Each structure stands twice: as C-alpha cells, then as structure tokens.
Length: 252
Length: 362
Image 1 (tube, helix red, strand yellow):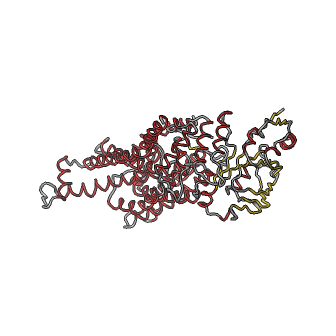
Image 2 (tube, chains in turn purple, blue):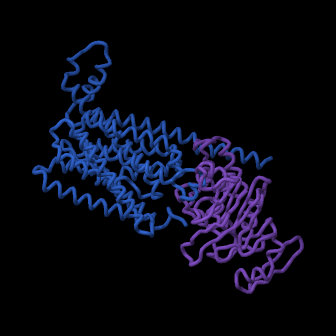
Image 3 (spheres, chains in turn red, cyan):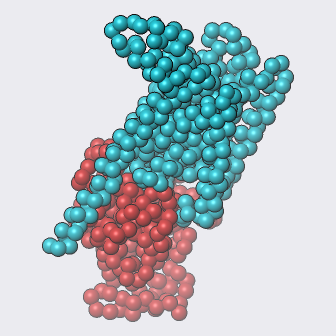
C-alpha cells in the first residue's frame, strides 16, 4: 500500500543523507524508534507528502504521492507533527472541530454529527469539561490531547503520529497509545514514533532508524533485544523479556 | 445511562453556544447598527431640528409632495450629505474589520491589522501620488486615487510580509516590526510628497488623518464598487480563513492550499482596505479592536466572527463619527483621532497579554 523506493532526502541539520527503502501493507501498526535526529520525523513527512524527496518515488495505493491532489492526499493521509503552532485563541472545542473540515463532506459548515463526534472524542479523553477553555490556558499535556483529538477526528486511513505521547504523564501515555491503536480495522494503517520502548508489543512491526536509514525492522519480539537496542542508541541498554511478548527496557 | 443523559445535555448546550448564540448575536448587532445609523442621520453640523429631519426623511415616502414642511435644502443635507456619509462610515467599518479579522487569521497573529502591516500608509502614499499627478479637480480623480492607493497598499503589505520572513526567527513581533518599518518608510514618502508637490497641504493632511466630513455619494459608490467584490469573496471563504489560524502542516492535513489562500486573501483585503483609505483617509485600530471584542464575547469561529466583527467595527466607527461631529461642534475633528484614542489602551493591553505568552504556545 505504501512503498518507498530508493528515497533520497537531504536533512538540513545533519551531515548525512537519508535513504529509505520501505514497504508498508494495509492494516499494519508500525512503531518507529531511533535516537533524536535520526530521521524518524523526516520519514513520516516524506510518507505523508509534507516534504518531497530529492530522488526516488513514494507510492501510496500504487500512485505517486506527489501526483495526488491536495484534497485526495488529505482524505487519505494525516500527519500529526511534533509541537506544532497551537492557536491559543481557539477553545478546545473549536480546535478539535476544525479537524472535521472536509471539502466534500461539509466544506466547513459543520453538522450536528460533527459536533457529536467532537464531543465523543473529548469525553473519551476526559477533556469534555475543558471544551470551553482557550488552548493558551491548557497544560502541556492537555494541549497534546487536544492536538491528538484534532488529528484522530479526521479518520484518515493512513495516520502518522510523531511522538504523540510527549508531554503526557505515564498513565495518559498508555491511554493515548490505546486510543490510537483501538478500533484498528484492516483498512487503517498507523505509523507512530516514540521514545517509549516498553509499548512495542502493541505493534505489528518495529522499524529502527539510525543515521537516516533503516537500521533494522521486524516483529517486536525479534527486534527489541539487548543487542539491537545497544547498537541503535550506542548506550548500555538491557531488555528484560516478560510473558505475552512484553518487555522492560532498562537504561544504565 | 445517567452519564449519557448528562452528555446529551452538554452536547446541546455546546451546540447552542457554538451556533445559535452566534446567530442571535448577529441579529442583535445588526439592530444595534441600524439604531446608531438612525441616530447618526439626525446629528450633523447644520442645525436641523428633530422634526425637520424626520419630515425630510418621511416626505419622499408620502404620496404627495409638501415642500413647506421640508425645503429642498433640508432634503440635500439629509440625502446628499448625512446618508451617504453614514453609509460610507458603515462600509468602511465593515471593510476594516473584515480585513483585520482576515489578517489576524492568515498571519496567525493577534496584533495583525491592515494598518499595523503598512497597508494604510502604503495606500495613503499611493493615493497622494495619484492626486498629485492627476489633480483633484478632474472627474476621475477619486477613482484614480483608489487605483494608486491599491498599488501602494499591495506594495506595502508584501514588503512587510517578505521583511518578516527575512528574519528567520519568525514570530509575532517580527511581523509587527516589519509593519512599523514599512509604515514609517511610506509615511516619510508621503510627507516628502506633501511638502514638495502641493503648496496647499492642509486639506490633504486632514484627509490623511481620516475623516468623513467631505463624503459624498461618489466616495461611497467607489468604495462599494471596488471594495464589495473583495468583501464578498472574503465572506465566502470564511470557513477556510478559520483553518488558516492553524499550523501549516495541520492545514495541509485538511486539504487546504495555505499559500494560495493566503495570497488571494492578502490581495482581496488589501484591495478593499486601500480603496476605503483612498476615499476616507487613514483610520487606525478599527481592524484590530473589533475582531478582539467579538472574539472575547462570542468565540473564534471565523464563519460567525467575520459578521460579528464587521458589525462591531461598523458600530464603533459610526459612533466615533457621531462623536467627531459633536464633541467640538461646530468644529469637526478627524474620526481617525477618535479611533486612535479608543484603540491605544486596547493595543497596550494586547501587548501586555502577548508578553505573558498567552497567545502563543509551543
């Protein structure tokens, strides 16, 4: 469904080039891990069409991403960036509601069903009491929740989230990950980057990124090992295996 | 079950606050504006009594002509001075407020306003160039001034835009600083033109300060003809303008072409504003103040905010014009002075908020 063929992208902050070869099937839940500045965000921006590769082509449903119209692309893919500009003068409800914009459905003239969708997602996140608060008055975690709600409500079939659990307390981190991965149908594809290495068991595939290219990929069980993580981060890391494919990652 | 019942009530309340309440506010503001319009028609430099004005207004509606209760001179004062003047004030207020709302959204900046970004002074310079090379006595002088004002306004706003992008550290303040720089550049140009070209600069100077004392149907028609099409498109795009408040990548997710929409909206609001400037002079702060008042009262959905801020802006400007007519009567003061006095504390308050970082969050 998504195919990156010899993608070459330059990366402004580091000396290295990014080179990706990758194939993603419909319905996969993919976790991207890697050190800061390794190219996780760039890979996500490439897939979602937010930046263009220098060389090579990205295919989504067998069509080149750059040839998609903006509308077509937006109905297919959504990408949640890391710490975007948040309009502080919007209240939570207006901000999440703006995610319901769709040219063919409502063209910005929101219907009662849109309001209900926003209300439901806010209740799920325990944010419904804040519906009237300005974004500028929210805590960092609440802002992150509002941003997630804004993106989730678009219900694109391919969703990319760049460190969605940043700024959240451990319980909210778990809740958010569950919320992102729940209701996953065979049509939805989710690509999520994170630094929380203990949640890998919830995904189909783990992709390790290092120095702008794919370092290793595979099932959580085969990838999250002491050796792989030590090589990826070049730090002393120990992985304790638990039952049900779960694991605990210790940093020394 | 119980929880769902509570949810239902809350959802209805939210829908009420977000839609119905906004629609009611638009009715209320329209009524307010109509009331102020009627008051403004009764107030003016010439001492027409209340009954004389009323008679003159009602006379054309009567099936018979009774010139004894309403002489021709009264008719001229009401229908050729006061009514076009009040209508021009309203139209100008709507244009400035709608442009202010648009600029604040597309520049993602609560301090944006057509004048702070240099459109006002740019258009002023353009209009004066137009008036000096094509003297005011000729018939198309006003249209000519409008055309040159648009050129000046467009040059100024794009200069501000590129200057603020030139500073890589692109924040709210750099846009305003660029606007200040461009404004003072065009202000200096205007002064230079005034002292070198025109021996009698007093009328031009008072025109620059913004005022409606010489407004005629011709001024109104020019602003209507050249300003209204842009306004109509801006209002039709209100749902998109709402999205332009967001981060660029979120806008892209929603399938909206940000840079094309921004360019179109800058051109349209600058066109409307410049044409208004060319006929009324530079009236500051309306475009900054009215979106803020509306936002504080009713929220930020641009679909409603455009109407609310336009009506608020027209009401404030029309009230200011009534003040300008009466406060030092029989002398009229430029309405731009009054709006500047009203707008200054507002702007200071906004700056204070800005320094507390309550608008930007990263």
